[in-house]
Length: 92
Image 1: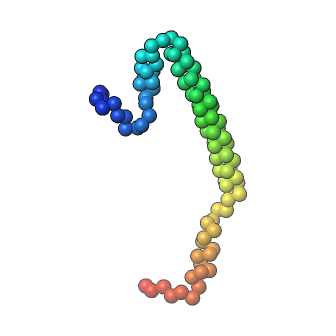
Image 2: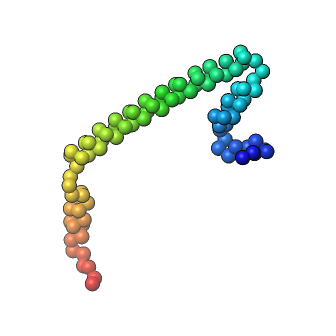
Image 3: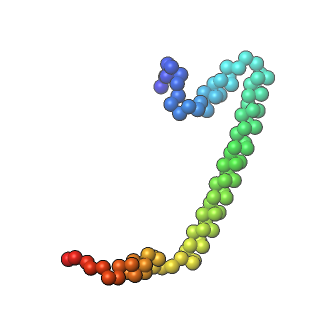
């Protein structure tokens, strides 16, 4: 699909567009500098996302295990509901 206005709805350039820009750079030095700059940014961001995913998975597993071991089998509101309705007439 060709977009004559050059506007991308997502607001971020795609990977193909980024490499097209790199290929259109005039010199080899600027290409190498741009690739190094992308690598310097991409590797820490990917590592951060990976570490955050592993930590969130570990926290989820610990909390779900805790809830499974120590959770009550009946809901807490079942007892409070009967106590709160004393003296209330139910029309039938």
